[in-house]
Image 1 (cartoon, one colour):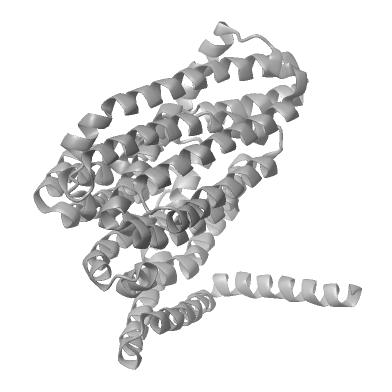
Image 2 (image 1 turned 180 degrees about the horizontal axis):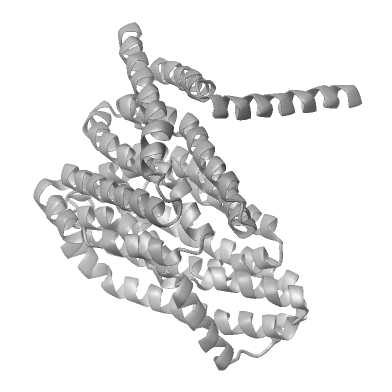
Length: 495
């Protein structure tokens, strides 16, 4: 829930940032978001490592090892945080003058904004350690509470300050620094309270070396995945003006909104698949894989297709700028196709990890990085559309590789049935129905707000229709409805 809430708050806030600061200044905020994600590759799996080691140590009663692990990793996180801050601050003049193409923002303001980005990045860096500690101690709710609360404060608080005091990048980033300080203090205090006296254990270099070796082994998939997911934004940020990059950042945020659906879905299906793999229930695994893929389409296709067809209306309502909406909508269309394709891969990717095929996922990600020269060329030559086309090309190759390898080495021989029988009918039905609905809605009204209201209703109807149109998904949906109705009846009887 914290991830979904954070994403929703970020999406809602963007419209206000664009209105208050302008699209060029928002481009700098978009660059900051890209930089944050790119920097996260330095984690190298340490967050997952501390989570696992703390949980294991507590389960075995080995609290001294937990203390050594935490103290040792704390040393690493502090050193990396200082390095991140120092490098970003030192590179601020180069980034401002040679990478970002600003036209109306003062160079000094850009440099100081980038320096403040470095401070925020350094302050946010140790959060992974303390989140891992809390989750390992089975106190994930505390971590989620801090994350969701401070995401709200950092975004909504920034909007209030920009509106009430002064709409400037300086105001925005100073507030982000303040919010990052409070977040770090709160998260660290929560973790230390849960750990108690064991946090005072001395750090151990031998423990540290062992942890680093383990984390490097398991982090390859995450690191390469983050890198290829950010390549288009990195290349575009250096190839176009800051205002144009602001438009691209808006488009990527809309496409990235699908994570609100996809991350919770993955968190549900991955443990289930892992259990079926361990239990050796091959037939049940195949049924779950195929039926689950169809159910995912019931939500994914209506949302993606609606974002594609109603991109202009969404941007218009969101930002209040017709020109901005018109120029950004085509980019949203390309990015949303790639994002939807990646969403469909939730099941193959979860199956790879559940089956212990991390090397397969890593190989696919490394192969995807080979598209970097093509993406760089497209972004440099064709700007925003080139970056979006490069992303779509990369996503298409990623889709083909995942489907081919997953069904060649894990669920052998399922490629044709999964693509043609499980996916294609739902995708075609969803896209055609949403497209037909869009054509009708455009004839009925010119109001973007009313169009989005009608689009939402159509999307719900189409999603339900896709689910009820297939026998296996219909049974699941009807069972879910019966369970819900039964709970309502029992609740009323108890009252």
